[in-house]
Every structure is written in structure tokens, then in C-alpha cells.
Picture (cartoon, rainbow, N blue to C red):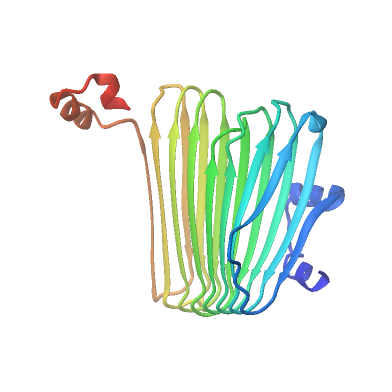
Length: 274
């Protein structure tokens, strides 16, 4: 446990510091080398009336040994609509030739506030995949930081935000290419209705020693209400000269030409919009 903590001791984040100070529950898992899980490992986060107006702090340390393989589902379920603040930190070490696939699903239709920090240290020939489904609560902020520390490490981040009413959801990603011949890809798609607000801030950092880097980032947002808002901030910070990096961001409503085309084929306007 102390050796794994050393990898993540550089946190400079007030919410993570709050988690360190108040945490009273968590999971520590050290996976042996060349171990394959036959089924996904599911972490159930279940909230009931007892958490009303409380701060819940939990912590996860998971280390994958060389050549191991894990699919992890981080699932949030609420039995009641109460207000609470859920503060979670995830820390992962993905060693040589290991594969970690993580799925974060939060579709609780409640008034909760949620902060999730995911920090990953990836080593040679490892693969880290993270899918975020952001739907239900009033407020969610997901932060994902991945350090590619040895050659041919890969990181793939995908996210979906589907927001309505007065929801405010944020996704912040930071992929650090520290070594040569590493690959990363980020794809985030968002749909916003009513008075919702969404934010995506994604960054690719390439160290001067990280030659032959391949980094890709794309955000697409569909805004279906005049009162909804989406903010996107793609970033590239590159100090190497032999790289292939790109980023893109699009935000807008439904294309009027596409609506006209569908209506010309017999659909009503409402059907075409759907």
C-alpha cells in the first residue's frame, strides 16, 4: 500500500486533499502477474436515505501486475432522491503488458454533487481504456489524468454526456506522454437539453523525450435548447518535434439541411428532430 501511494503523492488538489483527510472507506487490490479475470469486476456505489446532506469520501488503489487483464465497472445507484456530496479518488497502476478497461456509469436522477478523480500510471506495452457515461445527477465533475511512462503504452478515453433540466456536468482529461512511441485517443460526445450546462477540457502533453507520439482528441456537442450551454477547451502542449497530434471540437444544433431532407422523405418535424 505504501509503495503504491508513492506514485500518487504529488496531488495538488483541494478536493483530493479533502478526500485524504476524511476518507473512511475504500478498496485496495493488488493483482498478480498474468492474472485474467473471467468476468468484469463490478464496484457498486449504493446511496440511500442515510447519506442525506453528508459528505462521502472513498478511495481506490488498484495495481495490475505485468500481463494481467481486468475489466472494471464503477456503477452508481441511488435508492432515494437526496442531496449529498460524493468525493471519490481512483488510483491505478497498469504494469508492463497489462490491460485495464474501466467503465464509469452514473445515471442516478437525483440532486447529488459528485467529484471523481482518476489517476493512472501506465508502463511499457500496457493499455488503459476508460469510458464515462454521465447522465443523472445534478452535478458531476470527472477528472482523468493518465501518465504514459514507458514505451508503447496506450490510453483511450471515451465519454458521453446526456444532460437536461438544470444539470451541470464537467469532464477534464489530461494525457501526459512521457516516453517515446506512446499512443492516446480521446472522444467525447454530448447532447444538451433545457437549461443544462456541459464542459469538456482535454489536454495532450508531449514531453521533449516523447518522440513518435500519436495523440488524438475530439469533442462533439449537440445543443438542442437555446438555454443550454456547452464549453470546450481542447489543448495541445508539445515539446517533441517528431509527433502526430491533433484535436478538434464542434458545438451546434441540428443541421437544418438534414431536417429538411428527412421531412422530404415523409417524416414530421418532431420525428426528424428525434
